[in-house]
Image (cartoon, rainbow, N blue to C red; front, side):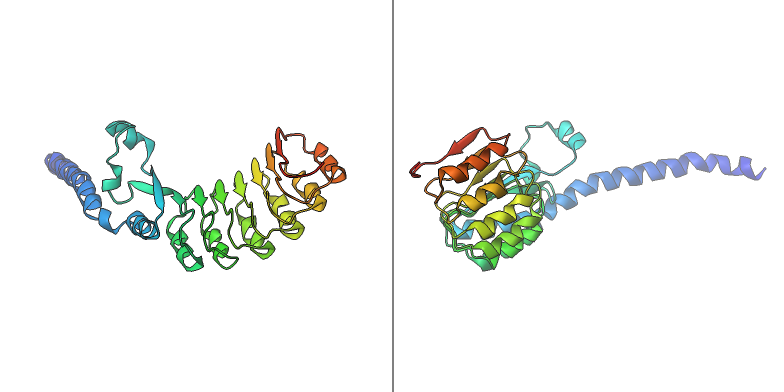
Length: 239
């Protein structure tokens, strides 16, 4: 009898639960849109803009939500968590070590361009916050061999530009652990034949740029062990 008495209430309970769920689903987008101005993406973009750089973003919501709105819809940046910072370009800006603290807010960053900035070994310690980096440009910065220690954490890095820096054989040896490197630019650095043995052990390396480095025919012969290499640039080297 107790069971029969409770039965009429079940549709009412289910209806209330459904209405509550519907209300929550309607309020979530409203709340996310209201919070958009507090997104870390906004802070990063403002900081980079002030330095004279540029930020690239990527949609961060699940694919099934993207399919509902259309994959080419560009309105996700109006919602908190709708987009994430995918790339930062700060080349030829006055960016210094203290500015790289912004990397703490970009855990999914895949591309970082810092060519010809004021970055030193102190600044690259912030790379521990962006371990998903696939492309890194440090061309013309003030980093040295000591700064190469910070790059060991970037295990998925594919494209690395260290040209015209103070990197020597000591620093180049630390790159051997970056097993996913595809392109490496060491042009204009202090590397010698010694470094060629280190980089030739990178299994997927296809492009190696060594322009204006102090290399010899004997040293270059060690690159025959790099079976994946398809492009080698040696401009400015008397052979």
